[in-house]
Length: 153
Image (cartoon, rainbow, N blue to C red; front, side, top):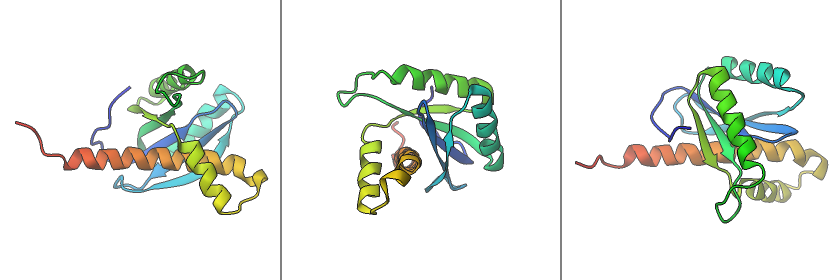
């Protein structure tokens, strides 16, 4: 997978899960992240069609997939699945795919949703969407910092 770089166009972030995939998309300038409807997974073919639709409708040029690591930074049971999913996306869509450390995104998303007093029933899909937004916003902020750093001679 690739490191953040300067490619223009919208970026799609995915909070990968076995039952749901949280989705977020950047604005065309790559500054802000907005959540999209959470994808309820059915099978590979249906997931592919849904993702293709999102990619085409939003003119996606890059994809960011959350990498579920343990707090220590070690791989978790879901890490390899996320990497395989990212490789599959890269192959299927021929777009750059970046992995992004998603530690704490679900915790932060749940905290925000609890504070908003959203019902527990509605939180499930919302937490995946908000996690994708947090993943993408962190990615965009890192990219912005990288752009601002002077080149070393």
